[in-house]
Image (cartoon, rainbow, N blue to C red; front, top):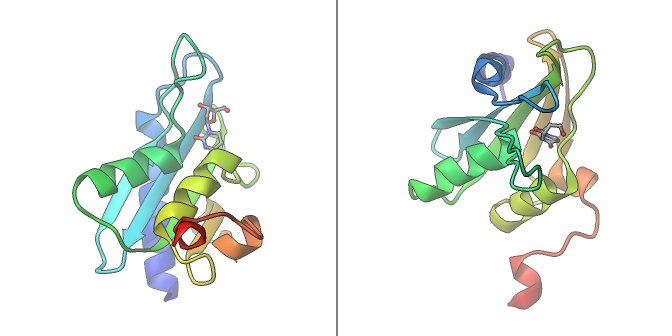
Length: 139
Ligand code: THU
């Protein structure tokens, strides 16, 4: 991925923070999901008074994309922090890693964790979910 593409994804993920619905934690998370053909779907976290129905930003982005017919993905950028202040990486939770495993090749799918357009690190899904269980295991 080019530096320009990465910065664009980070910018879109940061924009999503304003949509986060976080009355309980105050922890805002934004995501930007890039499809194989270059479309970008944003996502924010959406909390719930009953707590467990809370949806993470990453899953919001995936479910928006999948529900519009997308099935192939290249990368996701994730940003987050208390009150939307980005001091350290917001790493995807286990459930979100498993959702990525359903639709992405763990060896090539890129997960960009950022605290700003200038500061980021890129991991593969394989690195964040080693020995993951996915569709291939049921084939
Ligand atoms: N959260 C995400 O949106 N993504 C993650 O991968 C980790 C956690 C959200 C869920 C909840 O709204 C808040 O962060 C605190 O857990």
